[in-house]
Image 1 (cartoon, helix red, strand yellow):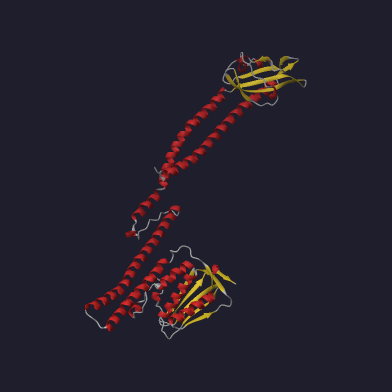
Image 2 (cartoon, one colour):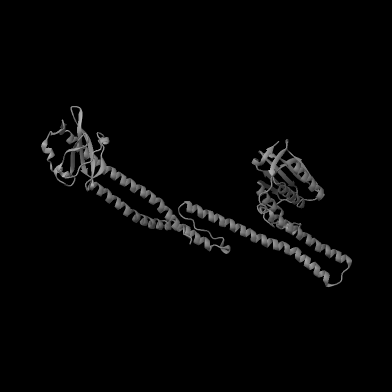
Length: 464
């Protein structure tokens, strides 16, 4: 079973927070333990210093500076925080001890003598905190004073604190997980609204958009990205519908002509001249459909072939060869001009560049008179190499300049004059140019001619 994102988020936050709480609890226990034990050791040290100044060993005999101090209640009875005292000789044998020790003895550790460090040990059934110091007389160590204080209360305090923290930890974890789960649910509510809205958007209502949240945060950025994606999908769908409609319309016309011609031929016997004429008309319709299908296939292949093979193309020789070939094939005058002083190379797919340039030249020849010339030039402008195709033909209206790269678009007056064409040449030019990193600029004036210029990116320029 797949765990929801809300559950995973709550678990991760709980896991991280639980580690932090565990560390905090450990620090709390350590600080309390250190503080309580340190406080008890300080009290124990005061007792040691007080008694070490009042008890002496002289030639193996115990002498008290104040005998009454030895009879104090805290040394004779087991009370809340009793003080245990024992005096031992250099061998660790007991010489005297406080009455509250009863039959028990404090432990003597020769290696710890004189360090004034305290440690915890068992004395009978009690746990005590003990410290020992040497007893000196005339600069000579005569024995040791062992002083201890009950550690039971401190141990009980630390045990209770540990138990509370251990019991409190799972309660905090459960509460934390439920809180995190609730907060995670509240945090992803905007995402759930986005999901609900996007699930409602289909092909029939691609114009709808996801409402933008008030905050300009990551959710807002996600919403804008989704809306931009929907806009691109909507535009692509509109273009696809328009392309399908235009393609079916353009193909329907030659098919209708072909069908009508064949129907005329089968109605009654015809002369050979009439058969030749009608068959020629039918072949013309077939040629038009073939040309259109070829253009449609070329347009469909743009952007589908994966990574293009880039090669180094020298602009002068490439443009000159393409221009001369177009002039020979068309029987028209196509001039080549070069403004380059040195060879200029660009890294590009040569087939794509050849298709772009050929389409522009054929377009210029189609929409200019036969007695006018088409000029193809190559040069460098502001650091960018360029190829320009210029004609003195009919020109393009201002209202049509932004539409000429759309598939099947042709100016109304061109349709009226029945100039042959499919309206796909410039669409192919635009798509190939975008893929190749070429910027296409067009300048045109109605009745005076048109100029298309291909600007190559500066970062693909190399000079020999």
